[in-house]
Image 1 (tube, rainbow, N blue to C red):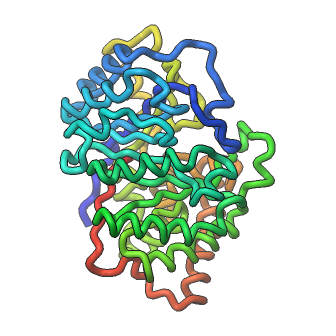
Image 2: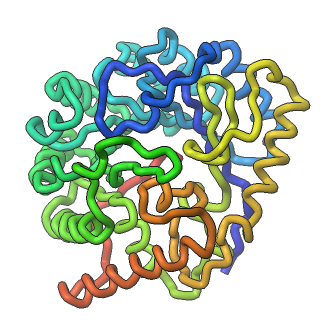
Length: 377
């Protein structure tokens, strides 16, 4: 087996702003405002340029998030400038406001191969509006993105208010995909419930692990059987299931979750640098956007993300996603590291096997003849 060069692929999350035009009950970003003003786009251009220079031997991609990034004037123009430099960019937006530039400029089209628009929709109208709002406007923008040829991913957070409507939502998306002859990826995750920064009231809407996985198994089976124009990326279902279908000699000694041989890190709107969006900042760039500081950032990240610090030796042979602290972020483990990861992933793998045995699953993840290209970090 060819060993993937570790840390070659790096995805940088840029938190453009924490301001938002929605007020979602499960949001863990907007309720944590920082007192400093946001970095300017001149700052972001310098950061991107210096990172590309420092990591010129890596494959760099950038993921823009908020808050809601399009509440900050000039965001679409900033993205266009990155794309015109040949930089791979993805973003996540609530879809309430999408600048006309994204519908019209060629660099945003799927054929350009550099851009992915991830739009947050939590189901059909009734389910979406239990937590979010403005369903009609958001859905209208999804349709315009598809019509305009923009590679679009639907991001869905599942909770007690929308879980029963997921099959109907997927069926609707399948009809859209058939109409526009596109396979629509739906990236699903549970409500974030980071133990170190709890959000009040989440217990009423949050799904427990087994309930969340059981729903994911059922939806995944439904999609694979009936919906050729939907690709289901259900967190801890699709990723773990994919690994179980692979050669059992494959382990995380040779392949990492997500970026495939690399890592991701985040830069917050105030300049804080974090190894993960819900980690503790280890440095701030606001007053030090220079080569020396960026070099130090990369040194620290490479040290933090060495294989044995990221559980790549895990004997479970599965993509646990711990490089992004995700089981802890979703409230399913109390800590971060091999000791906390092992019982969590052991339980997840056990539930996968129980479900497959019960349902007589073949383990085949997609019907033949349906292709899909995934972009985003």
